[in-house]
Length: 274
Ligand code: R5P
Image 1: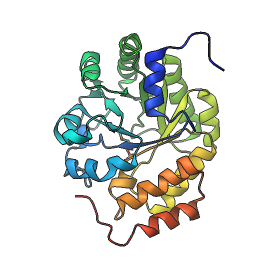
Image 2 (image 1 turned 45 degrees about the vertical axis):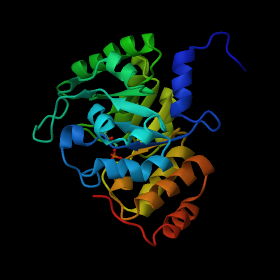
Image 3 (image 1 turned 90 degrees about the vertical axis):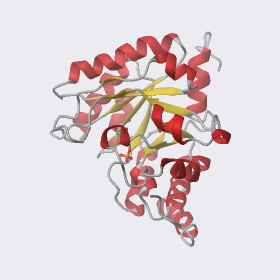
Image 4 (image 1 turned 120 degrees about the vertical axis):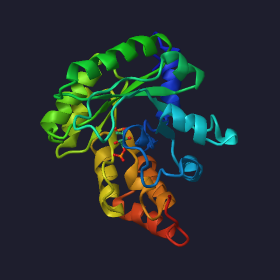
């Protein structure tokens, strides 16, 4: 059914990010250097992007990475979810001290499909990061650009249902169109707490192919729109196999075993990213 009034700019960009045929997305997160500098798998960012771009639906990255590392012929081939907060580094004890680092005009100029903001609920900078989110939503919505809120989890916070549902719901109420959060037990309750807002799941530290695929499987079974994995893809020995396997779960409703078969079929000749 066509609603009486469609926000065409927002809907157009949402359709570029989340496939409207199945309402699912495989987003590739490669924004890590914005606070952790050289990162295994992203040291040669151009190679990582060239290798994995064909297999993701959307690239979550930073202004510098887009400018410096996407080959001219690949520009525009996949939508960009542009990270627009930063200001911290792994050298700081408190990671939550982030501000908006990219203007909405710059996001428009770069043809971003969406912009991403980290919010640190319960941290010393909770209010500042929520206001980063609301300020950017006020500007981005005027321009038809959806905002993705990342529920970043500080060192003292538990990645459990209570915390993630709280953080996700605050982001939804601020007006985020997509929420990126972590997987937890009873994850469907996190998804339900922000329904109908789309939820994508962050992968976290590198684990193993079976564990990462299990997480992707349980996430979409619980109602997530997909994943926004980074290290479990670009730090794997078989990064192409991994992203293909994840895509088969997200878009093909494959089981973990079927996805592992896809992973293993890509193993011969696979090589690590730098
Ligand atoms: C963290 O703030 C960044 O947004 C990362 O992109 C995010 O943690 C997802 O990457 P990974 O799957 O490596 O955790």
